[in-house]
Image (cartoon, rainbow, N blue to C red; front, side, top):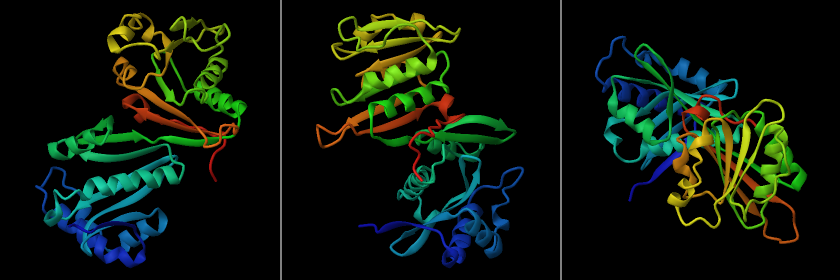
Length: 308
């Protein structure tokens, strides 16, 4: 059994991290222009850790992987993502990146970003599998990014509407939101907040009996298409609603859409609303997970009920 541990880097780990970086990058084929990773030393790594932090991975007590952090605005930048060649294929990189994403969420950062070289197809494929998208290319450098989920404990229905209204200011025509969660948890309440933020016409209620409603904009913005997929038998029935005709011009919200509506667009927001343990408690748990390059380029920012 492998004993794999990921720890927050401190000054005590500097020498181990330098060793991992050098082992990892010296084993790669030489690129043009070459990487500057081999110039890292105890001084530069110590400075990076002191300012922004990083991670060290150990397998059976032996240093196996490392990454250094930078912070640019609300973005966590990964630098010197390194796996010692002797420990490749043992889940080191995946564990390390997963923990880095947890760090970003814990720090309240909207995105994670890094640079990968186009000449390294295995590396490129790794980041694609991890849900990262190319948001820019600079010569041989591919700039990858991934938007981080937003989680909030929401005390009241008004707070839920306020969060959705704030989110509406970041939406544009063509955006798809897939809403799921417990019965009566507040999915329609969330959609009401979206409608207020988008300034659309008409009262937003559960569309259970009509399946789909269109709320035109009162301000020249995108319409809101509100769909309830609760009684739909599969994607074919969702497809029969002919949402393609409005997808590019509207913001589309699909309640009970998990497992159905993901195929509507490669870029979407997966939103889950769950009730508390106590049925009499209004408190809800909200998780917004951005998916796809559109959100990788911008991230989602919710200031309401922000964690300190």
